Image (cartoon, rainbow, N blue to C red):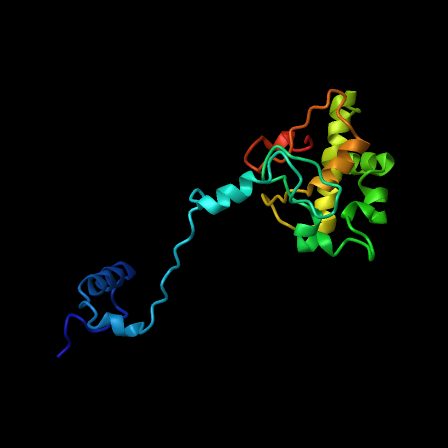
Length: 205
């Protein structure tokens, strides 16, 4: 004798079969010993809170401000933040770009021809800001050249980074690029995280 839980006959309508299936699912017994189905449950590692830093980290960071004791190449200058206070010899991806016998990434020929050469920087700016209809005023133009050179330097070192990922540039490279395209009033914004300003302002430093 057929029970109420047998597979419904084909003579039933689709709606009836659907209702019966829903009933079976809702009245299904609770699985016993469900924990044995997964004998090993990986534990999620707690991520370190970026806002929590140790006293030693703070002291180490503070020691970089107002001096160049952290510089190994001899070409860095004091920077306003600890993020910017880095030397080219501290970053392996940049260090391998230094020519044999050299001491700084700015000594690389590629650096001179691609990042501090005005003609090349102007071309880089035009390619990055292809919708720009006319040359900006001088201060904004020079700022655009610096930004274009910073971007090209980052691409040269790290390749593809993806959206929203930014890398600080070593102080020696920043110094060289700023010297090549100086701000008329000597005002520089410095490194900004991706959330510090609107996307339309990204051509500027």
